[in-house]
Length: 336
Image 1 (cartoon, rainbow, N blue to C red):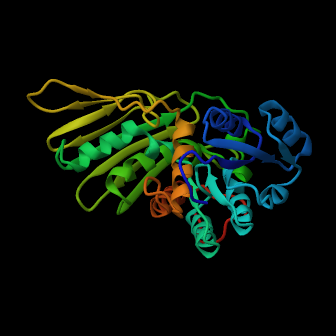
Image 2: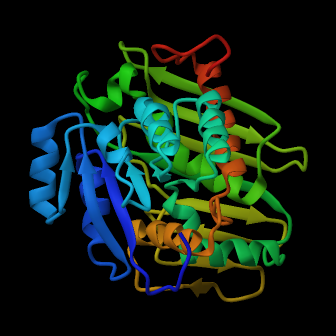
C-alpha cells in the first residue's frame, strides 16, 4: 500500500497470547491503525481475543487469516519455533509481516523468510522495538558522530528471576525455549546495532534438564579490537542495563536498556549529560509506526530494522548455541 499518513493501515494479529494482547492494545490507541482480524489454531481463543479487543473478524486458522485480502499487514506473535511457518504462510499469501523476536529459530530459517519476502515482493520486519526507540537512535547518532571516540566495549544483560516450570514455554525445546533466544537477543542486537556482526563468538551456559540454556554469558569480538560482554538468564534478575565505552567517553543506560527513557553521556573533564527523546509513543507503537511508515512509502524493509541486521544477529545466536550445545527438535545439520 501507499498513501497519505492519515490513511489507516489494516492489521491482522496471528496469536492470542500475552505479547499479542499487549501489541493489540497499543495498536488500538493509534489513530492510523485499524485491527481488522485475529487468527489462531483455536477458534475459541480467536473468538475470545476478538471480543476482548472489539476486533471485527476472528479466524479458526492462520491460513484463513493470511488469506484475508483486506489486511495490509499481519503481526506474528507465536513462539519462536513457529515463526518460520507462520510468517512464511502470511508472506506466501501476499501479506506484509511484522514478526516477533527472536525472528526465527536459526539463521537458515531467517534466510528462508527473507527469500520468501523478496520472491513475493512483500514487506518483512523483525519486531525489534529497541531499534525504533528514539532514545536509542539518539545514542547511535552520537556514537557515529564520535562523541565517545572509538568503541572499545559494550556491556548488556537481561535476566529474569524465575523459577520457570519445566512445562513453561521458556524451558520447552519444542517452542525454542531458553534464555538466549528469548532474552539474549536484546543484548546481542544492541551490541550489533553499534558494531555490526562480530568476527568471534564465545559462550558458556548452564543448561536445563530439557536441554535449553538457563544462564548464558557471551563474549563477542571484532577485528577493530572492540568486545562485548553480554549475559542472559532465566534464573536471576539481572540489572538489565547497558553501557558503551569508547576511547573518549562512555554512555550508560538504566534498567530496561532495550526500551529506555534516557541515557547518560560521560566524558572526561565534563559534567555528565542526560539525553531523552520522547515521541509520545510506547514501545510496541514505535515498531508499528515504523511498519506503517514503510508500507505507505512502498518500502519492502525498514532502514531502522534492516533484514541484513536481523540475519546477522541470528548467525551470532546460532554460533553461541553451537558453543553451549543447544539444539532444537527438527533442526537440520548445520543449524545452531
